Amino acid sequence: MAYECDICNVLGRNNNDIIESDMVECVDSHVMCRKHVSKFIEKPFNYQRKYMAKNECYLKKLYCPICNLKEIAYFHYVRYIERILKKTHSEICDEIKLKFKTYKKFYGFIFDVKQKKTKK
Ligand SMILES: [Zn+2]
Ligand SMILES: [Zn+2]
Image (cartoon, rainbow, N blue to C red; front, top):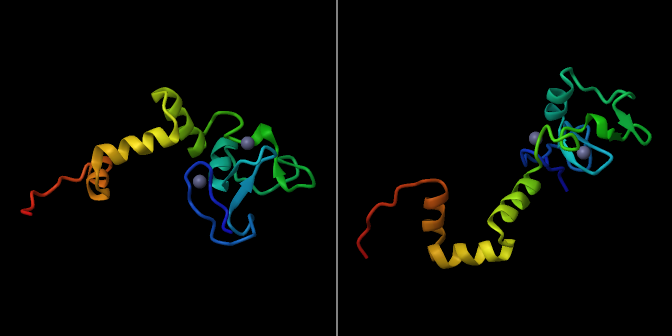
């Protein structure tokens, strides 16, 4: 399975090899593109011992942008929206199904695509 970035959701190029995928995992299991870490520590990140813990496999919490609230993981962002709306994932899904009826109408709404009036 390809690694997926918790922040931008991009998939790693290389299955099973996180370094080849240009990604990194922190000790708290956050997986992210190396570029997010580089931005956070403001220098190129090269899997150096000072940044890594546990046999140099995992990024220390201190250098993880998610652990330090410098970046927000996408699934945390979604959970936050659910909390704000005071609705669960399935309640929101049911609401979407009721409100739009078709995928096309739903897609049109979320991406602001103007619906062409078509004759039935
Ligand atoms: Zn990313
Ligand atoms: Zn982390």
